Image 1 (spheres, chains in turn cyan, red):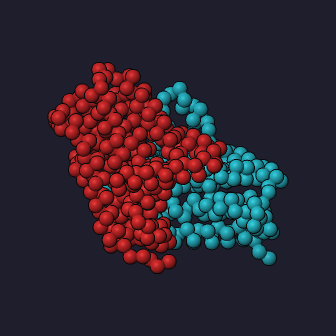
Image 2 (cartoon, rainbow over the protein chains, first blue to last red):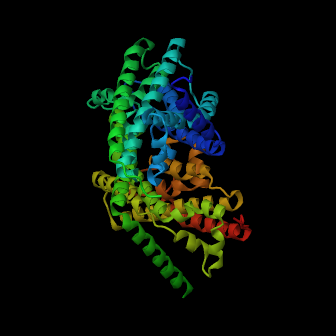
Length: 267
Length: 269
């Protein structure tokens, strides 16, 4: 008897191995990421030198934060899973329905692979270079490092759940690039990717800290740089998990609704 | 006579491209709106940082808005017009470029005429809005000369971005693949030049002044418009003439392109 997770794990592994083949694209992407990181670091240095007021985050912390952001960029729900998008457009999604598997876990597994593989390819070299040359620091304590790893796992689960919601929305719009772009815009600003959330104006910070997006970037990165204490890790993981559960439920619900009215586009 | 024929043909190409995009009007509207929002994040970021820090080494938000508006407007124009060169790597790979060479017209003209990407109007609108906002906030005595300098700066920066994309396509004659590294110069250039280059480290600033002269086409004329003394110590005459670097760069890129066309060997597929 096979373990119940078996087939989903196989889909994950197949997609993961395929995406690891694109090393050339990863190299080009890596250089671009390094240049962007350098620009951002210089901009922050200039801003920090412009004001003598005490800031909620030190320049050293921001520098490490920027480099983590460049390394982990592919983990964000930028885009829907490429194969699924093509399937929905061409009607190939019919084959997915024929498989004797549950669709939501299947799509979640595929999405997880397409987030993790490119991230692994890019993250390691960028982190090594940033650590050697560009001012990335190690976490202040082993506890901070552990908290960071736990929160990164939470961010991966949350990111995949959010990506599936974007993907399922394609069942309604077919072309769907509009909603993806809108989603990207929300994620980039509200996750803390564009600017660390502690630097946001005080009036909007409570709202941003309530929303799910901070679980993607703000929580793991601030644990890493020591801007959030490792002792706070449990409620933070709770924030990530609660929103992951909500988004999984939403994704599964939308998927059921979408399939009920699904028309397969011809041959 | 030949030039006129070329321009007429280019116009016809673009007309076809526009009509075909207008067949999917709802999609066009959504994509433009999405593009408007995504590119608008950049300015939201700058606003947040100014709220937090007050100023950027003595520069104000409207002053940064001028640089931001110039470079984003210029990039939107070039990005819409240069899409054909963007797709060029694929043409080489598929062997489609062979067909282009068979026709009795210039290759650059045909490649450029493939598409005018209308949805870039999202970034264009966003850049123009920021430009308009900062123009109304700046304590600048606007004159015809200053307005002309802004227009020249935008036109020149468009030429320069176009030139970079032509170089990227030219590299495909040798590599058969579009090199993602050039994105450092296009998108990275936009990211860099939306702030005054005086804030960057010297080697970085020099690269974007002398090698890929993006600073020459936006920062220096921008200073002349603002009437600010350059922390880097350039004079007004130099600042007003600096936009000439854009068309010059485009000219050199097209020369390189010609060398590439002569070097072209079909992939045979």
